[in-house]
Image (cartoon, rainbow, N blue to C red; front, side):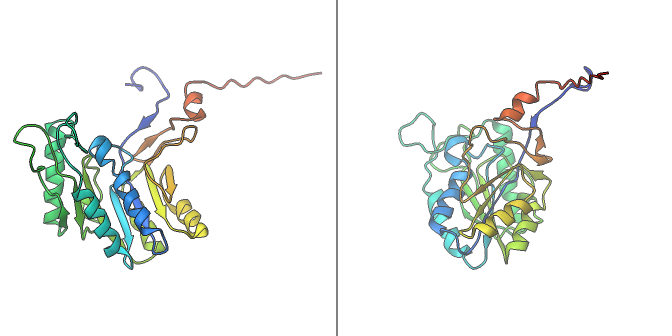
Length: 246
């Protein structure tokens, strides 16, 4: 539409398939909690472009983190969003409901294991678009469920051997909106953050937006930035004036 009406500036914050990398020296309990929070299960049923929907765990600590994440996700109560005690409501419509269930089945077919969830939520009746909060393990980097944005409550867990592989797998998708790195080695944290092809990187955190910091993506995750001075400047045009003096 912008092209049809002349050359217009546009800001596009689009999709994401965002990685959270957890290294062996990280605070594993905090990282596991952040992995669940970063998926935005309880706020938007996973329907957030910035959700850290790929959890990349170093193989040395994978089992410990997976157990904690699965326990937390399994405890999420799904139901009517206005009902007392509900943690997570439905996805927005039938299209997203069907897409989420297809993605889970695609993951199964590609060899992933369902660690919790895996279909329609239990105890919610037959009405409403309720997807069980789902964690998939043994996910291969090339599987569709690890590469395509689902925009639903589905977290894919992958294991990596070292820092280099973690960054390679993290960057091996078409998206580049957010990423997270968990490590107590500050040099490693900044080295990995520099290597990650993402517009917004958390170190030992997830999900939170800090106003004034530009939020925007790379690759197919969009163009331009929001929540910052850069966003305001995108509505302006620069004029250059030169003066020649005798």
